[in-house]
Length: 342
Image 1: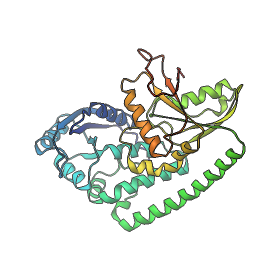
Image 2: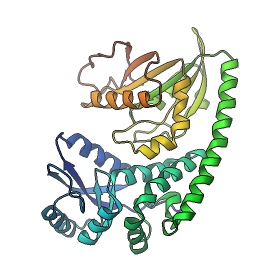
Image 3: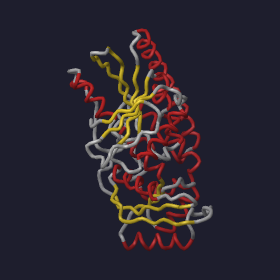
Image 4: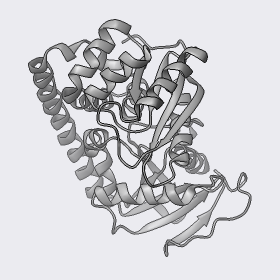
């Protein structure tokens, strides 16, 4: 599939019902940047309940359309998930492409997936998301062609044929089942070796891969280093490395990072990969110490770990990026904690 290299200009939109969403909007801006989108402005509307037709109120939709024209924006990104009807209505009202946070995250994943299994997992999540929204996507894709939200396997215009999509979903699930069996065989081999398994978990861009590379460098295995970049979702494929230290040997696993409002379909699609966490002897929860909202990121990570059935695992908290932190975080987890700069 053709990789999108041109930059888009977007307006971010959020609906505030009760809780303050400024943090979520900041994160949405980070996600947009990760997908090569320039943010021209943002709109937040406070309402008691969402508008079923357009999520935000009629007056705000008109204000949004005017803002798009004035700021020459070609895209609008909503922080909340939109229905097919809402997508269609908003595109008609603004005259530009409209996507939501889920489409944006799926687009980033489609761009970053490297392995065959990773690509299949993303395609599955994309198709499952599109199924109930065909009425909204059809017009968008036929009128605007490629672009944000159409990256990767989702752009094959499968949206025109429900049965075709269902057949493709079944095919992908069958392929992923085979991959899952292979992983089970590999896991069985690791269990026979009696080596402890340690899994790195945490929010995206907290420094899990950097920590893995540091441990590999300390044990003269730098040639086995993993990709480590200062960006959201740099790691999508689970990586395993054997680490030898004075205290003994263990298998270290690097996992995909978490983010708030991680699409349910994506968690489901990546569940087989993420389930590696369930079989670990120890979880190393990596936290970005320099981030003001780190407590929120810790909560999100703990929630996802709980969903995967690994909430009761023994855990070590690792507060990373201490060189950038204004002051040492206070650990309230009740677990052992370490303060490092990878």
